[in-house]
Length: 317
Image 1 (cartoon, rainbow, N blue to C red):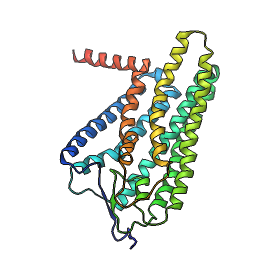
Image 2 (cartoon, rainbow, N blue to C red; image 1 turned 90 degrees about the vertical axis):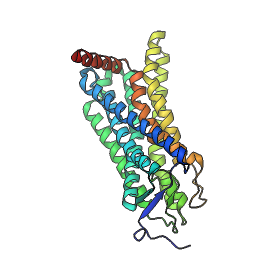
Image 3 (cartoon, helix red, strand yellow; image 1 turned 30 degrees about the vertical axis):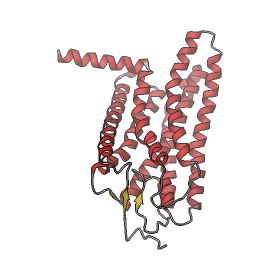
Image 4 (tube, rainbow, N blue to C red; image 1 turned 90 degrees about the horizontal axis):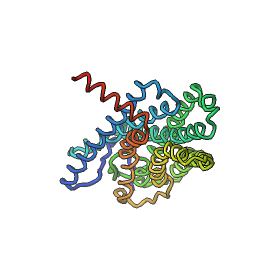
């Protein structure tokens, strides 16, 4: 088969989720609502943390970083999905596809590391409460945030570089709704051994390591909680960790299934329903749920929201 030269034919076609006109309208409305909830929910969470001095702690510093990442992550994928759902021209340029892949990979890897850091923060708060302020000082928090972003940037650069060196044999149709590495590996007609190897190595280093660091942190946390004699104290401690465990389970589970399983190559248009549906969970659903999960489970955030609404109501009156 003739190998495709991307410098000559630099546009891909995003096939999207469905070709049914009615389903397209339904998908458009659903994703539009989810995207608006993602933006509004995360912006509200950032605002609440900034206006309440009591929330200026390491946990909320990382939570604010998570909210910013979720806004950017969702914005790198969902607007393109919304446009392509109803538009006749579903093409995306070589540069646009590479940029989307780079940004989404960077933010996805950064969020993986950030969730592990947040688990370590909860470990320090529950298992080392007397030394918490010393352990989670401002300098360490800053370097952890910058380090997680730097690791994401480096990982993305490697993955995008390897991906766009593949041969696609005149296949420009991406059977997905955004430019993602597994979809390109399925499209390729050449040898993808290097791509698979780099994906497993970097995925193992970032995703699996972050996941096990989170598990280790929570193993210590649960051990410490079980030693608390008061049932009320145990319940309060479990409550502070439940929201984070919910996010971790949803996010890590879908990412590991997508990126660390064997990537069977069928043909240019091949993709299972799972290959299309699972990315929705970590590109649209999780960024939307994060602010609501943390807000509903957190008394400080809820009280600040209530006071904010009351002050606005009294101002109007």
